[in-house]
Image (cartoon, rainbow, N blue to C red):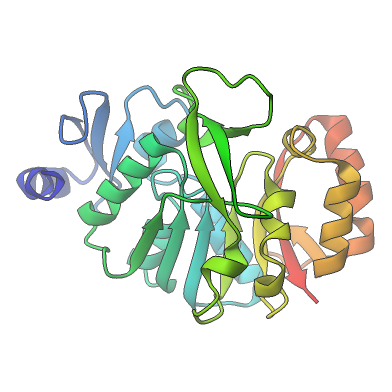
Length: 279
């Protein structure tokens, strides 16, 4: 159905350059948008963050990927691992604009995953982008995830004993296990709403192959799933340096300064994204 609707709208969308159309291919609560003749996306109509940014600017956080690549001196790559892919606002332009040849995306929220799959088909990237509904973590497990209707990008893992009735059951797997028989990726891009320590724990062997990591760094969110000490420990075990992903300047600091960066960001209630260089 998505293929047929995409074909039906494609001429009107691209000729307009940038437009919004009501959609029913994946439900009545979605809009179809084109980002200035580049990528097309289905987005949640009520999404006030990722969807709104795609409507207004044509991108969401993509500058963080390109800035991180510049900081690393990387012009292109073979395989991008996109953890917490949401509707595909990182992996789809990364592949369609030839920055990466392929991508593997992980999006455990069932509603987000449905839209992600539709967007991959819509942009004719089914051969280049593999979408997985699994969550990544420190070990194989079954967990609960809560969908955020106003900001689907903020769907989060629930650790409280009594999960809301609106939560979803999702399967967790280690990235090392998933990639066991695959070539080493070029980069890991991660936005997992505080679950970073768990994902890093399950990705140790992959990162130790020399794979850099770009991830959201929010003391507030990380503290909801683990501790500052656990984050500092795992990063100290895996990485030598870190830098800010929102700047392409090749400035890096020793991983020994990460605790200070945590304290300063926590005191200022600021979230950021960091690039980590593996040992």
